[in-house]
Amino acid sequence: MTTDSNGQRGQLEITREDVLVAIPRGDEELRVCFTMAKTREGKEVAWHSIRVFWKAGSEWKPGKQGITIRGRELAGVAAALQKAVSGGR
Image 1 (cartoon, one colour):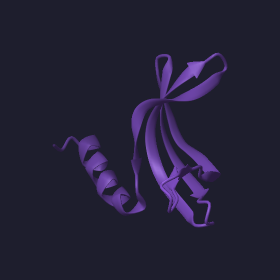
Image 2 (image 1 turned 90 degrees about the horizontal axis):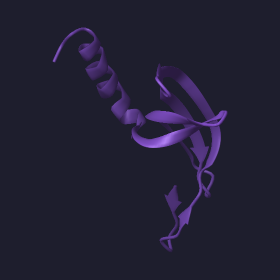
Image 3 (image 1 turned 90 degrees about the vertical axis):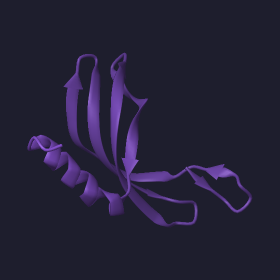
Image 4 (image 1 turned 180 degrees about the vertical axis):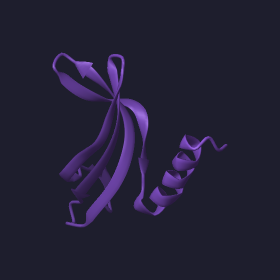
């Protein structure tokens, strides 16, 4: 979502969304995604996200559990996750 100069919230236009990994968790999925979008002003924005999705009939819906990671934060988050995978604390 974006906010214009009058404080009104506007929609981002999603131009690309890639699921990098979907890990089953019973009746849910943990997804890591890359998303690109355009603001009303035409500015391109991008982010990574980690979110739990749940199944509604045959469709997957995003849950409230999740985070968005900005590009400038990605290297630090990746390094911390790699450290965790390697058994570090």
